[in-house]
Image (tube, rainbow, N blue to C red; front, top):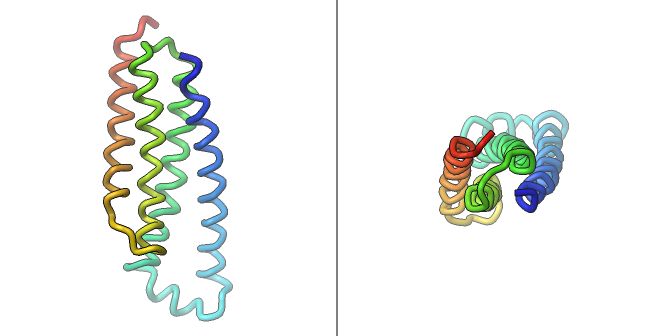
Amino acid sequence: MKQYGKANIVAGLWVMAFFMAYGFLLIYLRDFAPGKEAWIAGSANGPHFESRLAHVHGNLFSLLNILIGFLLLKLPLAGGFARWSSWLALGGLLMPAGILGEVYLGLSPVFVLIGAASILAAAVTLALGVGRAKL
């Protein structure tokens, strides 16, 4: 259905832009910031490692939202499959946001788990919808 998908594309592009900018910050911290040696030494574990995970997963899940949104706009899926795929993919963005919440705010990892389960469920729901669609 045409009403689903656009939000995924828009959100995916905005979140991607954020995590790309965050990647530039990580490059600055690793290569140019005062005390970069200490940052590099701690990058294999802990908050530095998790911040890199957030950057990678943020861009990956953004791309997945853009792709899912495009497919939802182009494929004739039944409303339920389109609606659930869209919302679950958007919920998947909780994973990289949750990693940042852990690193910077000390939040629980529950958002990471919810986001991971959500993006997986989005892929399964979309697969079921495409499998049942009359293409």
